Image (cartoon, rainbow, N blue to C red; front, top):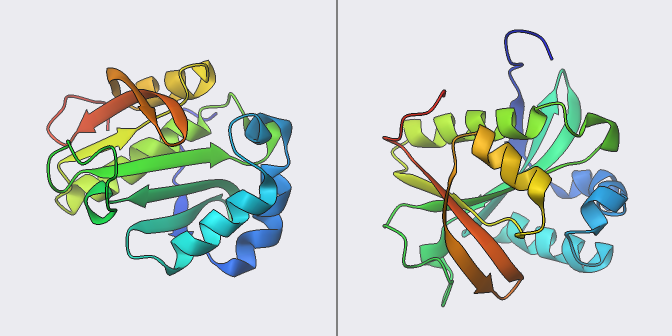
Length: 171
């Protein structure tokens, strides 16, 4: 990675991205943490239509490299993160191409998204990797997230982490 972190283009995900998402979801590094490809694509399709979730694609120099989304847990009935302050958004990210893992893209994309969301007044971001997904946890820590607690959600166990807008970070 260069001395200056790259600037990513974050754009809305659309159905046109589904062939690429299908390919990424079948990659072993994603298949380990996601459900079946068809099930996950159906969920992303729902997200494209929803008001609760905003699916996005991160591009580097015009090349799609990651799927990410943010959601408002207060808009989803019985969401397990409604104990968070109003205005909190949850985020998720997955790097697609396996050759881009371990290069710092995940934490850099998360830092950029966090900065953009904080500038709009969002007070807190939360993220919930599987406790066994050490690579993701380290990337989120690099982005400034701190461990809050362990939870069990409808998706399984979660290493629940948060980043507050007023928190000291390298954003």
